Length: 187
Image (tube, rainbow, N blue to C red):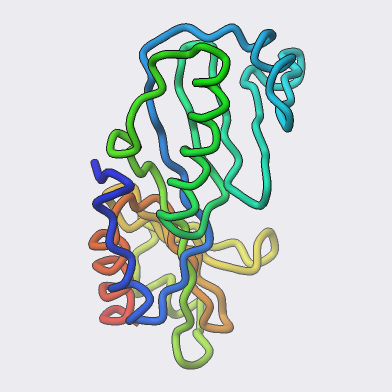
């Protein structure tokens, strides 16, 4: 697992791979009273009948989902710095409310990175689906305009005829870069 502070995304930007979203996780190892936190934290929403976690949104930073079991899920950031800024803000809020165990930024683990890049030119998805092997793909153009290619190691590529490719499921820059390079070789 890759810590958010160890993640070097410069190699992705050098290859014109744009990061669109991070999902990261921090386990505090404590029980939290979500009703109390909801009543005390501005920008928090807790509706357990609709969603079991407290949702914390603030000032253009990633959203933090807070579970009763003390897990913080960060989503919506486009850089490690976004996630760290969101952590700083929620940890300050929790600390002011007397939560002693707010973890450490180095313990935030990257769970998923969503990236986008462009293949130079249009793609024939019907032909590509044959090349990639039917066992690894889902391609039903009547249902969805792209092809879903399961690359292994949890990485999934959404490939569109325009040449746009979305990678999801990777949790490190090297995993994303490796998947993109493999796609270029295949295509």
